[in-house]
Amino acid sequence: MAISRIHPLFLLLLLLLRAFALLPTQAAARGGHDLSDDGDHGSVSRNLLQDKPHITEEMTRGYMSNAELETAVHAFGSRCSNISRVYSIGKSVNDFPLLVIEISDKPRQREAEPAFKFIGNVHGDEPVGREVLMHLANWLCDNYLKDPLATLIVENMHLHILPTMNPDGFALRWRGNANNIDLNRDFPDQFFSVNNDINYRQPETRAIMNWVKQEHFTASASLHGGALVANYPWDGTKDTGKRYYGCPDDKTFRHMASVYSQSHYNMSLSKEFEGGITNGALWYPIYGGMQDWNYIHGGCFELTLEISDTKWPKAAELSVIWEHNRMSMLNLLASLIKSGVHGRIFAADTGRPIPGSVTIKGIDSKVRASRTFGDYHRIIVPGEKYEVMASMEGFRPKSTRIVLEQEAVNLDFILEPDGADGQMKLLRNDYGCRCGSGMMFHVEEAHIWLYLLVLCVVLTLYLVFKRKTASRLLAYRYSPRRPVAV
Image (cartoon, rainbow, N blue to C red; front, side, top):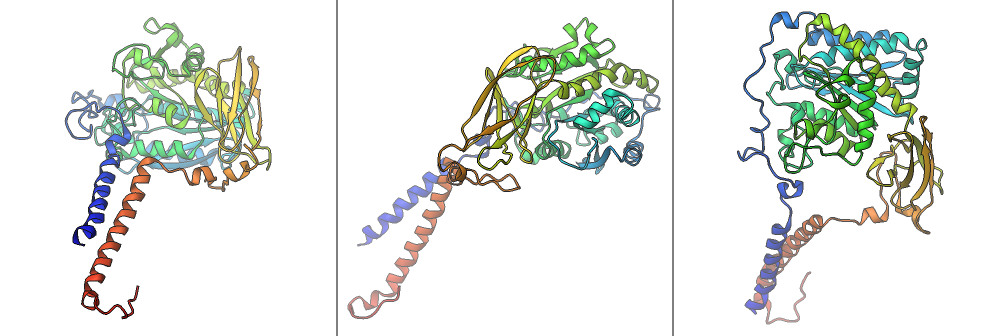
């Protein structure tokens, strides 16, 4: 009797141990290889070199301080309130607000239009982007309804401008943030798990990541200094080798980079970079970069734009740098509207928009439609033929062929439910929750073992309780007619 009672508990113990063993650890779940062998979650490998450039008071004269920039942003919001709003996406290490200017004819509304973001001052010692982006905002405000290009941009897209991502680094006059971390090495990386521990991620990085999740950005660009070139993904390679390593949308990225370079005063004339553009991994590989993360996790086509040969040029040169980059910035924005394929995805049974995905045959990447309007904006190279397919779980995919000339193609998809119970597979609320039967009962292997673990614990407690109860009733085992409460 004793052996027969212990045996089930022993089996349950084995199940518990197996469940614990099969639950994935954080490192295994995130995958990749750590670039650092210091055992400190990669924090040392992400620290900057100790040799910081010496930036004098003379060099900073004429640049806006952080306080002056904040004042300028709010002043712009007041002066151009009809086509803009100012909002914050978070704060820096030293508690400085990361303020964004949104420019649109309907800046406080969601629309089925492409969204673009410009980010400046990623590196503290590269402040040119701060000044140039304020020039851009003011130019759009001053020329709206006067200049056709300004009017096109304001009325057909939502432009978000973050003049400084790294205000603390600017104030400290060094590359990293207040913790001396290079923010353009702080994002999760596709090849190495060095930045996968969220506890070590910088607040500025988290702010950008949350921002990308909240907004439905089509494309973006960050402004840097120290070279004159338009850089595009991938920024690194699997084996850390320095060579050309293109992403699935390599042709599209080269087109975007060329739009910027060819519109620039002299970027395309570069002797170092053919056509004034470069693949990041070919130039010099980096890991944890913002550019690759945007493309992989946000479906956002981002360029890294080096717009000044000098990291910290004299303030007297800023107006010239702005003029050299003005048409490049405007043409890059306009290309999102004037080219590519745009449309919405609807459910045939309800007529409501759905957040499906759009793929191009031969290109291994997806662009997701927005939850609110089901709108998508796919950047592709003009002058070619494409097969475009829309898909959504619970619906039958649909594809069509298009010829993309120099003008954009508008293409809506109406997807039929997949079978008689297709409608039940997608019960989507206004918060974007997809609660179809397939989703509801789909559980990953790790979660199954977690549920089994809880079940085993409950069963173990039950058996222990039952055994104690049996012991208390042992004195009455010779009285079979005595009632037992269960």
